[in-house]
Amino acid sequence: MLNSDQIKALIPHRYPFLLVDRIVELDEGKRAVGIKNVTENEPYGNGGHFPGVLIVEALAQVGGVIMAGGERSKDQIGLLTGIDNCQFGQPVGAGDQLVLTFEVTRHKGQIVKGRGVAKVGDEIVCEAEIMFAFSAIS
Image 1 (cartoon, rainbow, N blue to C red):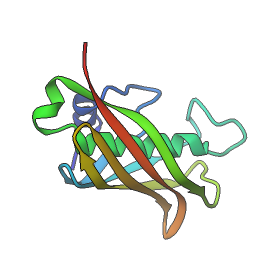
Image 2 (tube, rainbow, N blue to C red):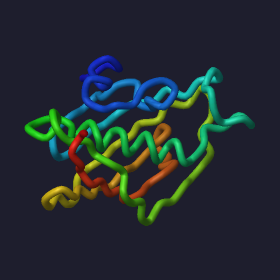
Image 3 (tube, helix red, strand yellow):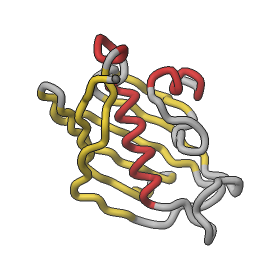
């Protein structure tokens, strides 16, 4: 399990755009499960719901944690390059806990593609195919 400080050591996101509170499962390079607790104190999402685009970003951050380890972590960063087949279910609001699962489906050279699924309880609230390209940090 990784807490927020450990997550921040792996990906560059910081408040208010670090959207993963903890990682509860991690199989480096393959699969991870993260948690996002949605509260009334979120700095975005007027109208009482957590925006779908941020759910997709949270899934991408879980994917970034998967790929952040190993030899790549010191000199490269994963950049979100594509989102395909994205679908949303019920709205997400304060008090909900998002369970964010990301599984790598293809890894070829600098390109990584995976499937992300966000759930609240047993209900799927978002699923998408997400692609990253790795680039050197200057």
